[in-house]
Image 1: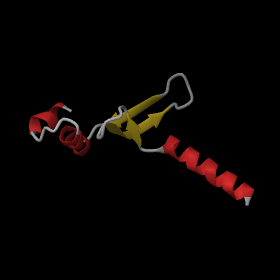
Image 2: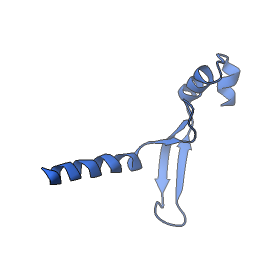
Image 3: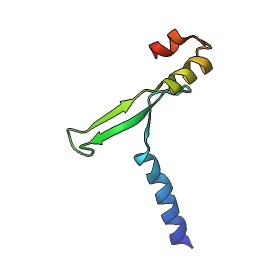
Length: 75
């Protein structure tokens, strides 16, 4: 039973490392979708991420209380 618990804990802790989301702040909507990863673990590692309109809209509405398209376009 202890081994099963240890394995489950290890799997749960390892899951965020392979997540498809990259958070860049503590506010709602401040996250990017990871599109491509290469060279992870080397000195030439790179991550390509994309900011989508849905998250920008969420950030503008929840944090900035701004419902305009201009805010979404800026984010």
